Picture 1: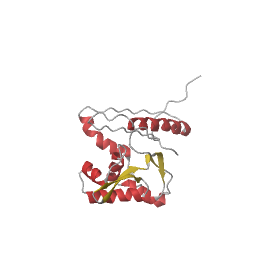
Picture 2: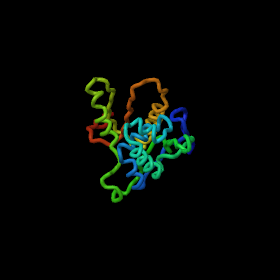
Picture 3: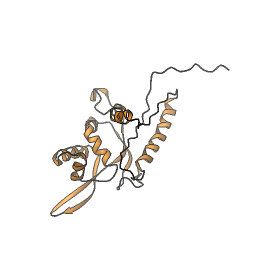
Picture 4: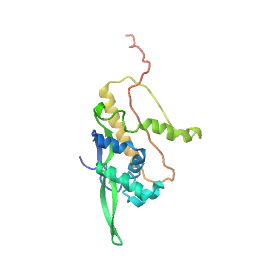
Length: 190
C-alpha cells in the first residue's frame, strides 16, 4: 500500500492499519494514546514536543510513545542531533486505524474506545454554546451499500485531515455508521 500523504502530516504514511491482535487493541485503548496519535496527524514530533502539547511529563509521554511504537502504530520518521544526543521524530504508520475481526474471548469487554461516546462528551461545551453542527439520519440499506458508503466517508475524513492549518481553534470531525433499531416504512404500494 502506498502513502496517501498530500501535505499533512509532513511524512509518508499508509492509508489504513487493521488491528486484530490483543496487544494492538490494548495499545490503542488508552485515551491518552489516542490524543498522541491525533497530534501526529499534524506533523512528526519528538517526545518533548508531544509532552509540551499535552502538558504531561516527558517520561509519561515517552512510555506511551514506546507502547505505540512496540505495537506498530508509530515509527521514527527522522532524527536530528541535539548536542550529543540523537533525537527522534515520531509519526504514525497509518492515517486510519480499523479494529478488525477479534475473537471475543481475547478481549472482553472491548478495550478500544467508543469514538462516538467520547465525541458526545467532548462536544458538550460546543453544544451548550450553540456552536455544534451535527446531523443524524436513518436509512435501510444493505451491508454492501454500507461498506461502499463508509469508504466515501473515509475519503472525506482524509480530506478533512488535509485542510490547510489556517485557524487557531481545533475542530473535531466525527463519523459513525452502525446498525440501529429504528422504524422503517413498509414497501410502497405499486
